Image (cartoon, rainbow, N blue to C red; front, side):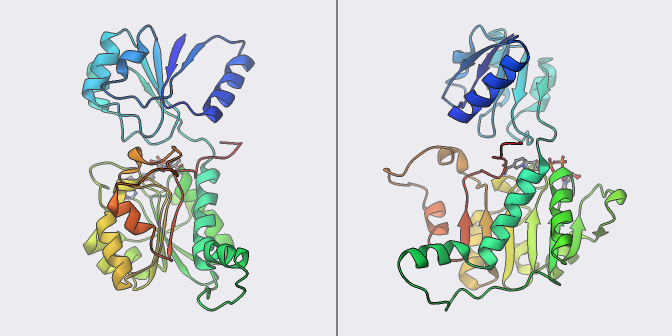
Length: 302
Ligand code: NAI
């Protein structure tokens, strides 16, 4: 099969080439650096399938353009599929494949890394020590044992995350519209989770029901000084409301591996450029905010 791979990075090429070789090289892979969009869809001309990642746009117009060029399958190398118009794909009889589970632990463990870094101020301590500043003032953390952790979405990643948090001796509260009784979790309504959790971690997919699930009203329901972690999809959190919460102290720590407008920023080296997104730039000014650029999935195993 001839596959056009959009948004290619060196690591994609490394792992996809290896997988193709291992299978006896049945596929011809064409690596493309641009993101898939209405403008770049033409680059897939001649391909039977198109392989995309999280910030490639597979809306109706793009799917129609791909289909008209002869593309007969869309393969996502990610778990979330909020960037694909599934109704349009169905209408075009274009199968869409995704990765149902590529190491849920990769994301769950990165979530824990963010929690612990924020809690113990590792990001600030690292910078201080490098500057020869060995003072501890301002680095005070808290014991995880006995804290309440709210898990929003207990699918593969949320379940893995809950398992680790239990190991820390935390009280785990869970919310999911489709609870999994086998996990033995304490499922509560979302309102109760928000009201009682010291740490709220988001592991639900982005869809119309979860868009801005964490907005000003939700933040107002949370414990003052709550730690909010989003490693799922950016638009589940209303970033402007989160900034307001940080300024008022309603949010005590914020950890983001994803951001609403990440498509214009993440996965690129922009260190020599001016960042035009003022909302994102504001986020980076808080000492109690930790941002990673959608790297939770990025392990060898995943
Ligand atoms: P999953 O499909 O196994 O689990 C999702 C869970 O969310 C399901 O149990 C579902 O019932 C629940 N859910 C649906 N609507 C909800 C709502 N309104 N409130 C609370 N829960 C709700 O998916 P998985 O593999 O656990 O992945 C979760 C999300 O993590 C993906 O959709 C993706 O957006 C994100 N992700 C992020 C990565 C990263 O690198 N940062 C990598 C992989 C996934």
